[in-house]
Image (cartoon, rainbow, N blue to C red; front, side, top):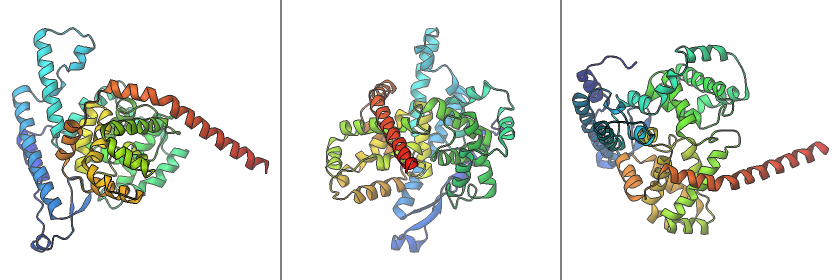
Length: 400
């Protein structure tokens, strides 16, 4: 699926991808804002310090790439697909030697993924570890092409919204913002809207699918990554009409923020600032509209392996990193400006992920699930009350 490149070819491709950014001497002296293009074609604005951070990060990725190649050489190309810990916990009997091998691989893999998957390996590793490959294998090989042909020309509320959002999805990108890019993104989004009519289409998915297209290279692989994301990785109902799942996530996040950053929570509550004003977009777009693309994809590396709890870790880390500044704010607008500026210039994913996993207390998937169950009744009651008010308002207007 991913070609038959030699390790030398892959290494050369990786080296070509990570060119050193060199601001002009005038820019360095004046410390003015410079524009440059990142690995995925996005135009980024930053100062010379930002460029230096990016160069350091890219050097770390090169070093990380050499670690992956060494593991492939010693353990085999698909070593990370050997029995994982989940196989043991699910009660599948394994010999002691295999259990130890699985445990070693799982620990090694978790550490490696948190340090970043090399961009040239990212499509293959994501597709395998996320469950997308397994999901695709359960349907006929022609599933995606048959689906796109079957829905071609059909018009629904979802397709109309998708057409409206296409030109607003990363405008100015050299490929996404072209007729070819729009067409590919449209096929993925429309195809999925027919695959799952409960979700259909929700704003935010356009940014997620667009970034998947840039990473996975093919529409079909991007489609299956979107499918596994919505059907297996994220919480149910995050993108349905009433966004009930998203509302639940926001309530869980507020509770976690109160526990992890009580001073920030007290300060923001005193200002009557609702953290969902910024966090809703983070969770719906999976940080793709907020963080630089290279940082977003490092978050996604971990998301596809460890699950949706990663979103809470990262969101909490952003608040934690700016705690001192946030405590000095007096106005809601200042809070939003600090968080937006912070996320847009977070070019060092290692700093973010170190805070997210080393300075934020451990959160298991079970812990998050319990929190969700606790919040669901209140969210559903609130949404039901909102629907009743809306229907009552419509009835009053019809009777006028």
